[in-house]
Length: 212
Image (cartoon, rainbow, N blue to C red):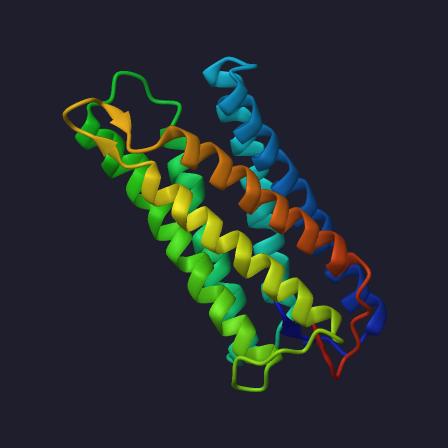
């Protein structure tokens, strides 16, 4: 997420920004890989779950480092905190996915609910970030690198949310509402976050400007 630099050392800010960027690239790439493996039936469920879990670790790392990049209690800082909370909710869902023999109600409670709440956190975080890069308003600023990162990530958040809705398990069938949307929505959303991380890596933070 887009954050004003909290530290006065430009080298520290650049290093943290790069760590966050790489984390989002790796997290997004692994989520995209997991979704592709699931949709194309190219791997076992445990392998897919492990792929997602490792990807979730990198998402959480990126979220935490984003907090360190922000000035405390400012809008970008709140955006980063909400994002990090979202990654922790994803982690609950990803760990619960390893459980076997869950009823539809248990699956929705331990896997779907944390996942959809995490998606909502990502949307809220993205909205706060949009306000941050637009000086309190939603603006078009295609000439600014941090604006592009926020927009691409927010598109990814929307796609994650749609995939999350489609993942609800119907009690009557014990299957997700739309498995295709779950996988392809997750894949496309993850690609957005990976792309946002690539763009972020080329951004140059300073102590006085907003970075992603």
